[in-house]
Image 1 (cartoon, rainbow, N blue to C red):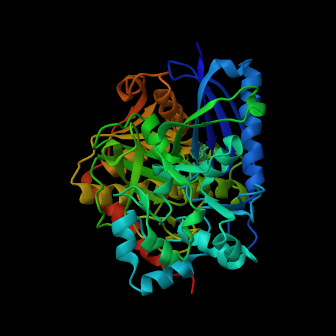
Image 2 (cartoon, rainbow, N blue to C red):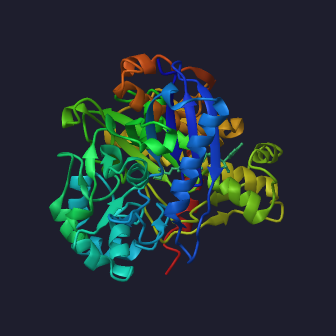
Image 3 (tube, rainbow, N blue to C red):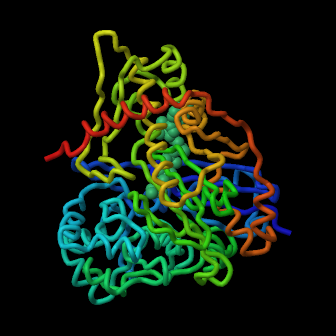
Length: 498
Ligand SMILES: Nc1ncnc2c1ncn2[C@@H]1O[C@H](COP(=O)(O)OP(=O)(O)O)[C@@H](O)[C@H]1O
Ligand SMILES: O=P(O)(O)OC[C@H](O)CO
């Protein structure tokens, strides 16, 4: 009887592999950071070979360190940084260039042109997405238009496109697939029919032959090459990292939501079988597809994505040098009672939901001669919480759901000061679970359910345990006054790049 599920969590800054046991506890973990490539202002790239090599290295490392044999592993679940785009040669398996990362802004002009031609509503209606450089579609177009010879090769059927899940699976087992949650982030996928859309492909000028086969998030899609782990292992779960975290947080019912505080902040609310169209600049996305993979087996979500969250703390550390480690930000921010009027808008990579302004830039306002690094650190943490408030109010307007509690995870959710402030300005309790590796856990659950390691969603949901609950403790007047000030500062950051 196999003892573990192996989750591969390919994130923006590192690749992780985690072995989970039947109780959903972490048995072992290995992690490797890899290179971030910033060759032009606003560009962010990864070398696809670094992605693959770091991921397979940590997978083998965790097995070795735990003394686990391939026969101890019931299945592999894969979860990944989403939208990041890889194009490779089908015959050789070699990428035609670097991966264009989700944070990369180079295709903002392509999005502007599509919007000016009046196509925004069509893209939103079919894909649930906003026309923004964040999503994969315009990144594929850019590669075809800018890598010499790529378009002709694509038209001859020689090239394959994939998000990071597809890239890893093609290396692991030779299949060219993606799941519905990853497909729903590409601007090419109709989330209502669960199929690639020819009208959108024509607008983006992308040949259909490049696209992967779409599969459910919880099904066996192939077996790894025997040489990789000593014997073939089934790949049985795939989900984009934010959807996987929602599953790992056991937000299985409509109206439940989680927020992940990593590099960026991603809040997802389960809306069940309803793909709710946002009127407040959120995106509608596939959470996961189980069972037979049809629409009836699909759970939809509303999502708000914020581009800079924990990354602001990294900037305080590496850019300003006012802290030595991310964890130190809490003590520095707590050394002053408030920000003394300083407001920080971290639009370093433009603003994501609900503002969608690719041309906004980072701004610190309200400084006086009395301003210290502690006020700036506190304002940086506050900005993470305020961005989350903007997302939740948009979500509540779109769905008419009043959130009862917000489940949280991700590196910055360890910060108690931030979590208390988050509960205060949201006016909603914030709840942190015992297992905060929710992304990998969600992928493990999706894979484990597909192979019978766990029986059902109900069984895995019952494993979720709370570690700490933060109750809101701020008056309505103070909350309103702070949010008014935040929104004035956001206005000042907007449309800065000409
Ligand atoms: N105590 C802390 N307070 C605030 N931010 C933190 C703290 N610890 C880590 N972080 C931030 O959390 C992020 C790392 O979280 P993680 O979930 O690993 O991110 P990702 O998966 O996006 O790489 C970093 O940006 C880091 O600066
Ligand atoms: O790799 P992460 O955890 O920063 O997540 C990235 C998101 O999937 C981008 O949409």
